[in-house]
Length: 371
Image (cartoon, rainbow, N blue to C red; front, top):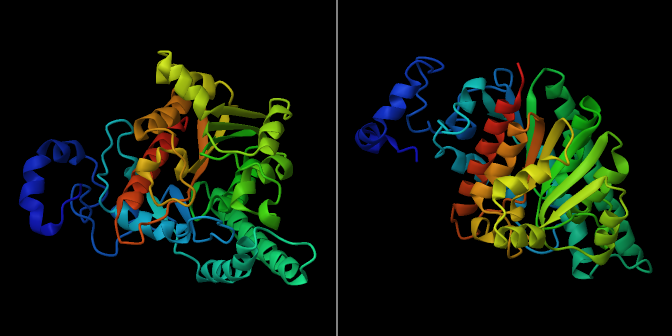
């Protein structure tokens, strides 16, 4: 908790030890990592510009094909707001903020694409998918697919731009479909990488409801369209179609899925979680990209995400999963965090959990870098 200015006397009494830890590492005389975040400050209350930061975050306010609950296009802004309450010292990862973290401004054009695509997608979703005999729905589907392709290309080019400048790059969604462009860019830079996919859903549907770039098709598109991705390792999956299950079985090992039921049964039989983590991580290559849909967590932690499913990982389990990648000596090269949807009644829990998971992802990614 980063206390507001009127509570500084309390903050000081509670955090004297933390202040001593920071005393030798404050980035500039004007920045106090133990102080309340300044109004209008950047992600996690930090002062970095994208050029100064080592970690650049891309906000992607896009949720055109969401077919159940909505609101994920406001996920980046909710995480930004909640991030200013996250303490910057982390007992496991140290001081990730010292490397510099910056969230890019939200592109107004991307928001406009989302609005247009959502308008075209709504009648299709209400109809239960595209009817080939209905030319209006076919035309609307083509428009959604075209706008989605524009979005993916823009995210791809933005990611390329910052990777070329030596940055670590992450995306903050938005629905899970936004991950395609950033994964593609990382696969270009790190051919043979593995995607570690935390999700309630397999996301291996082909053109779900007629949308080529559906949020339910993201990993289908990654596997089918990005040859630089060597393997897809999925964790906590508990909701899928029979066709998706068949695709996993017929992938020849390129897709390795650790179903939630399997993980839970192992836990019931007494297998320690870190031992399960080691089994998961063993399926990954040297370079790892994290693609985390927040609904991979227990829905108690993300009650307003679009398609919550009972089960999933606790926050400590998800954190230990990422830590296990680092412990193994593998390098986390990039990530995305998607499907965070703020409470329409104004509650901040979803954004709070999302911001804290984001900081853990950044911290472990930085610890994985080999000098």
